[in-house]
Image (cartoon, rainbow, N blue to C red; front, side):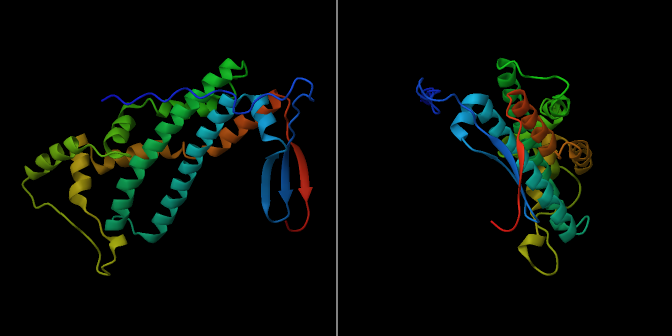
Length: 251
């Protein structure tokens, strides 16, 4: 049975104020606190959404969530390198988990950026030169190999592909490692290579090919800065350039 389509939501989530009220004038300011960091704030979120356009603001939110997830994946990867020696069961398991999730997240980010670009063009504020760093991330989503990794090994595992890989590995004239761990017996230092390597065999790639793809993707992982720059550019285009507020002492 086909799933019923969700009715299209009204665009009036942020309805316009009465005609006799003051026009929208949201303020955006960069608040810095000594030794505590900074926050970009708005005095009136509904007015900001109306000024930028609700769909444009939602597109930015969607892209930033994926960018933040990629930044977190990068942090997890660095922690893993400190904890697990190269070539250990834990290191191999973490890499074969990490790269498919990275490829999947970069693909989703590229789709989100495509939507953001469409909304900017509708608002006639898209700038090809300013978009150049984000365009490189978009192109990653069109890469055939990474799409195969995403579809087979990312958020969903391809059972047919895994079965094919199991059969291929079974035909090898050598013993197959089913489960592997280290002497301390901790689960975080163990893995089930039979399944991971079956997926790779089904895809007809090996860990070296996956590692090379990771190296190519690694330079795209600092995605938050170009997206921040683009958001600030759009604010300025819409005459919402943030002003600086310095706060001394605690909150």
